[in-house]
Image (spheres, rainbow, N blue to C red):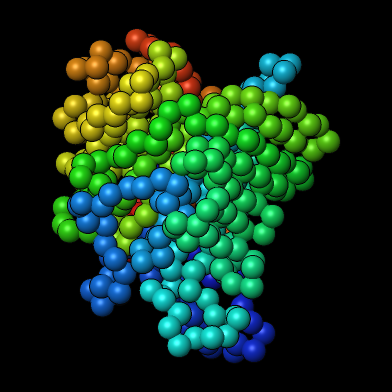
Length: 393
């Protein structure tokens, strides 16, 4: 899971646009395109295709952009180690959000159907530093975009950040990004090779997020990718290798107005299994009954997990000095039928992203260590702790 932001001040528009037109345009962007985090009016929802049961995934076809849906994201997280033993975590996410279902009747080269966002974060675990940055641009004039589904070797890009899929089923992938933070540059360039086939989350082609038709996404993952490449921080360059996780989701209207945030876990266990869990939090400290997960066996076989199949107990806290958000600082994750009882601990306490080019929704997305019945590494995403999400609109 992930999220999309808008910052009306950061996006450039054609010079011929007046201030009044610009304000109106970006107000519509902000209201329509928060990745399903607000409740869209019926006429806006009906303009885009909902994520409904029965969807049949095809690879490499589905690695590209599904333009009939309003929101979509391609999402990497991973753990890397240099030859000298220095440890890093990273996140690179591209978001596509549509302003209109199509560009029918609009022939101008400036015509914008989609806006593309990207977030890039690097956790220097041994150096105890966290870097993050973000970008936004319109998907026109070659500035940003995502090749449509069915394209051979699809590319998703924003300026000089990109990811690309190659191979018979898209199992070979490359990515690169560069950023500036805290007066230091940082960059990442990786080649990825899937060690397991893609797995589909949810049931009957949909990952349901709340009750009601279309309140869902089509969601698949490569849960274990062999990674190699380079990390650069300032003037230091590190040759690295490790393992990554890739998510791709698309849909048009996911969250209910009573949902205020979520806790999402992607866990790679050293026994060869992977575990994805998400717990959607509701108002009044309740949990969305349709929260769910997936367990992936060493041989790649995947099974759906209902909320009743697992338990997530948070403890401790870390308060952000920037947003004031008060986040959990440790978790116990149990899946009794699978004999899984894990303790999840952040590799660094401060891994909060504060997007400068998005709406003011700070969130925590970080590398975690796994101990307990199994060891391993993973990533956790926490939203709604600094600012409530769905219900706040």
